[in-house]
Image (cartoon, rainbow, N blue to C red; front, top):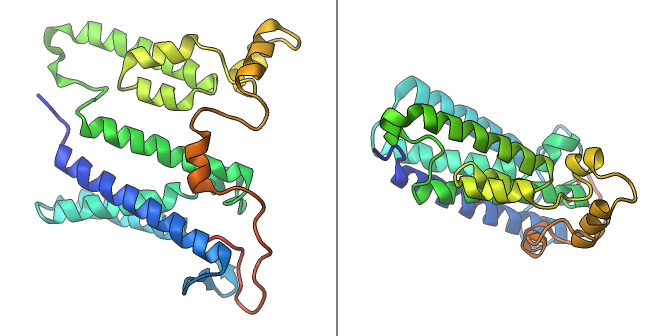
Length: 243
């Protein structure tokens, strides 16, 4: 039995992607000082758009748990969840740094998070699921396979192969491939297991030269922006650029 509600996933994913793209367009316009958009400040405090996303996610969760609405309100909640998730994940790097690093090198983590979430949504839309109700009498075997797969996923993430590791939750063979491949030289795995001066560390540095993280870098550059941010706008109520 297919337990994935694909139409709901489709509504959520579409809202997520559209909101992310529009958010990046607006933040770029704010950064460039173009158009009618401006940073939001309340009492001199800059309000990031992740704040709206967090409250939206909390509201959607409460409404779903309390009322369990039927169609079409269920689809409305799915769209609102996608919007809230996009607004929140678009500033994922700020969760980690607790600082306004939106346009800095660390801000690329936000685009990474959105990319991973989009891939998960696409896999669910295609019917991939790590939890299959069709296991039948082979539940023990299925459980063992799931546990082994999760170990491969963990190794892949520790090696800095986050995207392949996450996709490996749904397609186990990809987790295995990522787990046996070379680790990123600045990953936790490399720091603990690749000795300084070792051939493995040298290979890893050749594979991932300084300034390059993975083959998705050009796609991340498209949304994350490159180069230093312009000077922040001056005047009353002006906040940091880019939100």
